[in-house]
Length: 151
Image (tube, rainbow, N blue to C red; front, side):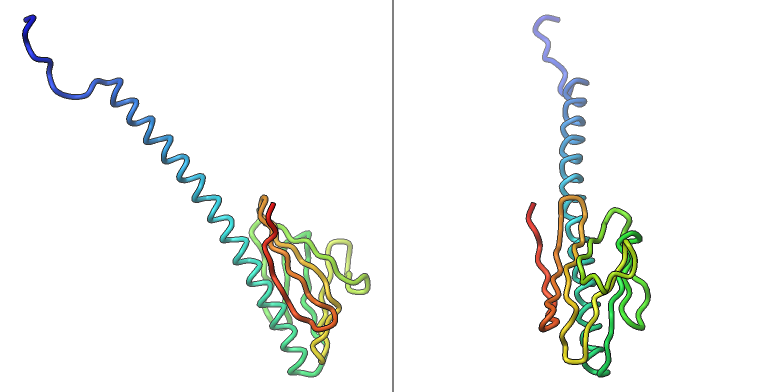
């Protein structure tokens, strides 16, 4: 019938186009979410490492004896005195720059704190993809600072 009204509804092409647009939007949102989640993970890991360093320094001051935080960059682990071993996720990695006398092996070393609060000093980086948090330990004061490095 030439004058008949067309049936109301959506064509198959319109439905496929809408489903494809929804799929693209979900992919973009999930990619953005996973990047921010990775950023939060590396920030939390660096914050925990700072807490372990400050704990080690405080313990040296209170006990009046040297204390050291051991770091193994090959296995992505660190250990504060009388604390359990902490292992970072596989996709994160650590780097350590410390005094030559504090290097215990090719891929491990320590940062030592003294009873007066001073330390052997050093730098630790916690990395995940392009995200990096640097932790600096001042050798003179033993002060521990953390900052994000923009790349």
